[in-house]
Each structure stands twice: as C-alpha cells, then as structure tokens.
Image 1 (cartoon, rainbow, N blue to C red):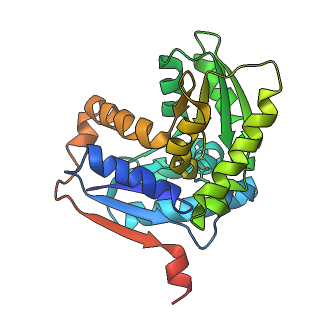
Image 2: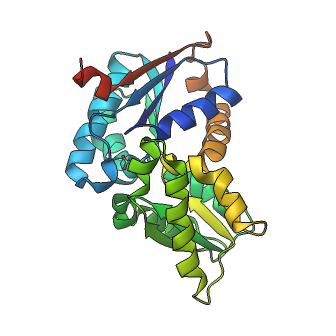
Length: 250
Ligand code: DGL
C-alpha cells in the first residue's frame, strides 16, 4: 500500500519531494487539486467537500494506507471531521494525518517563545494553530498569526521573488513594533519555497519552521510508533501523481 499526499497544488509536492528524500523506499500517490486552488480563500464547507474527494481518491483508487493532508488550510478545516465522520465508515483501518500538530510540536521542541506564523486567510480564521497550541503549550509559547493569502498565487505562478518581497514588507512593518520574533512558522506548505530566501532576510537568531523539513521527520517517527501501519506499506520506490487541473483541461 502507498502513502498518499494531498494538497490544493504545489505545496504538497514540496512535502512529497522531502518525504521521498528521507523515505525513498515507499510508494507514494500525490493528489493536487489544482483545478480548485486556492483553498485559502474558500469557505469551510467547500474545503471539506473538495478535500474529501481527494482523500477518497487516494484511498479508493491508489490504495493508500495513510494520507497526509500536506495543506494547512485543509488540515485546519477538515482533518478532525474527516477522522470522525468519514474514515470510521469508509476506511476504518486507514489513517489521515495533518500538518498542524507536527509543526506545533517542532516549534515547542525548539527554543523559540515568540513566533510569527504566516498562513492563508482560512488557516488564520480557523484559529486551529491556537486551539492545538492551547492543548500542549507547556512553555508559554506565543504565536501571532498573519494571513498572507496572496503569496499562494505568486508561488504557484513561479514568482518566488515577488512572494519574498511581500514577506519582506510585512516583516518591515512588524519590525517597527517593539515585539521581537525568534521564529517564523511557514504555516502554508507553499511557503516552504520561501525558506531559503527568508533565512537571508531575517538572518541568524530567527528560526524558520518549514514543513518540508518538519513533516518527513515526524512521519518517520509516526510510522515507527505504528508498526501495524508500517507493515502495510509497499516498498517499490514509486510515485503516481494526479493534478485535477490537468484533468479538466483535457
Ligand atoms: N498549501 C495550502 C496550505 O498549506 C494552501 C494553498 C491554497 O490556498 O490553496 O494552506
């Protein structure tokens, strides 16, 4: 059986590449809902409907044992509901994981205490990072969430420099405030592409939390802790990919 990776577009592919680098032996299936991108501006119900279609495809047609929602927006708005309402009747032996809890764990494991989180409008509005932080904040970590939905279309179109400029101006305006951040969470998988550039912008002393670095390590640990799931994974080093935008244009 395969590991499925779901995203609205390019962001999840960055996670897929990082997964394949750390765990190349497994078989992967990717579902990018490029026909309906961006999710970050959609209503919760629509995000649930679209995510469920993608996840169901990965389970039913690609025989995935595990699906990772490599999309913060989908993780924020659909993970719990998919786990509670869909999975137990549709595929009770399989698993769906999101990216928010592993990311928070990584931040809590770090030295950072005052962190800026950049994400889509929908992720910020969901308040999910703060809800989950409230359940496990053992060191007084503060997270300020800022919505930067316009970055997704820029990154999807390949204009990483323009996206970086947007973040630069945001950081400049925040720098005028007294608060000093010691970490930045790239709370949208698309933003992982900005990690290198951002490191140069902020310099040392500010940790950039990119999910391409966090998620593969956390999944590796999860699989070690779940031998019943690990035992089902096939190891032929393959990858299949479905981009819904390509289907519609045919
Ligand atoms: N990559 C997705 C995320 O992590 C969102 C992109 C979109 O708005 O579709 O939130």
